[in-house]
Image (cartoon, rainbow, N blue to C red; front, top):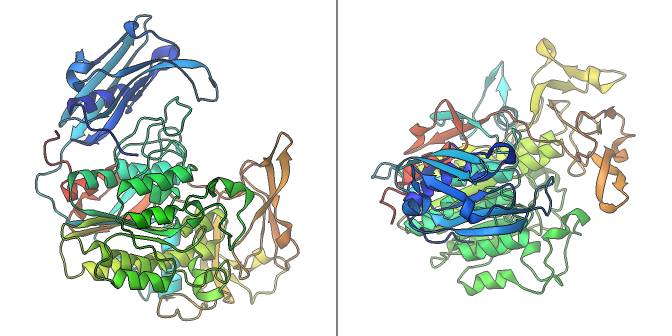
Length: 614
């Protein structure tokens, strides 16, 4: 869904100011929010939601003391009555003022909104412009979804080894010269999800949990919320550069969708597919074909009831729609290699799994998960390499997102070993980009989580120790010896994860589960099962209990959860993420930064918005 043409540059500032303010007891809301920082010329929707029905004649909105339309260059549309989506006021009518697709010149703006009955709100925005001369031709943004410091430490131990306290090697991004701590909290919560945290990276605006490219307003329709222009849209509108998206998750998932998509609900998979089709994305690779193929298409892996929203309800073939627009559409690793090597390939849609691709441990070592059903899945490293091959055919450059999504997905499952193996996979993919950029000085490479997990390494587990309980095999402090994983293979993966001394990876937030103190070699961990469903809605689980599948294993110990009973999996942490960067523009990353500042650094490096907005 594209953002309309700007009415006027100044309009942007007005909108932003109003957005952040609140209206006394009646709590009206203004979007964009207070203290928003925006790129000059970037488009956004200005909107004010009032708490109840308010006649337009009783509303006054100004920007820097002038009537808003004098600054924005256009009168907004006033909606006198529409139903409210919020839980407390469901279906209670409210009024709002909307001005779509505005943009502003650099400066500071103060927006005020008042009503005749005494409501008032103010907000202040800062609109910035990068230096006129771009520093980088290309930007490659790697997202280690949910990656913590513990992920990096454990991946270094497994893939490089450690002797007498010194590592024998480093991850590919350990030597990046610039580092920053990244704050991840959202507008409505200190604990973010992948949707609004990625949206902060791609728009420069703080959002709300589950939202992509929008401010969460009172509207019921998930597609009818104030939009903010994404970096993908900016690149397509203001430059001739290409845009690529690579993930080992479903391409409709929150992180990859954040490059182009606008929706209040990240679960709107079918709308996200349509928005990708309309976006002009040049390379799109990952899983998630279930949302692209006709409903009559047989599935290789049954779709869980909770994932029914991903399945099409019609016979439309969206892969064919992409092909009709000039996309090459490989479905296997071999087809991808051939497509990328073909000199004429400029646009590519690669869908290699119905859902998420299998993780590195299952694919490269155990051959578990769904590897048997999808034996020709490309590795994240291959997808990165082939994406660079295709995108670099554009002499004007590109922006590429690469997500290692399973780091997060396995941490949700409390499956530490799989999460760590996928961190090694991320390091391998970053090495591909480093090698590609090594002979050039025009590419900014960023490696960062979108959020973190409460994951820690506390020592080792020594299975040679005889003990009545596995917990007494845990070594801490001086008893925490070096793991005995076999020497990793050429890709950095130990080919036997069942070392007699292995890492003790723990999670600080979890539901009830059986801790087996050992890696799961028969497939990804399934820590819980539903033990009580809502009598009014059988699809809704009220209580998750420990999965009895693991109860009788020799080492199993019940861990009583510390999360609400309705939580099926582990949850995200509020901890800062650690970002590493190299290349032109990387010097912008230092100290503590809000996640919205990552967007600012990328557009500044690219010189986007340097031209005065029209």
